[in-house]
Image 1 (tube, helix red, strand yellow):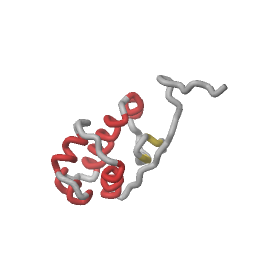
Image 2: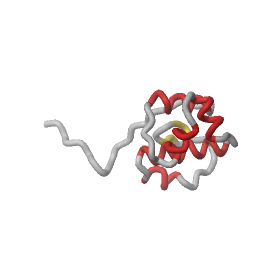
Image 3: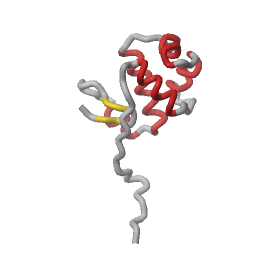
Image 4: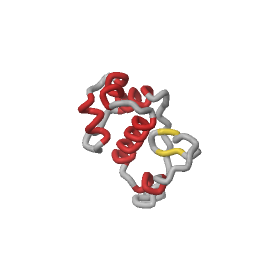
Length: 100
């Protein structure tokens, strides 16, 4: 099992792992919500109802055009019986300055 930014991925071969790592956080979130929703065969409306939001908001999140609050992301993941796991890893793009 490997972890991405929004939580554990099922134990299955994930051909998109390298692609996910290269995505922005918003794109990863959009991909994972859409992936889970389709895996669970859940409509956007059903997910919205379970998460206490609207179908339009779910659609915008899945398109990467909406920046949801952490509370909303938590409710969405709970609708799938999941929880958010924050996994920090070094970024090669912007390493921090070393303290002197």
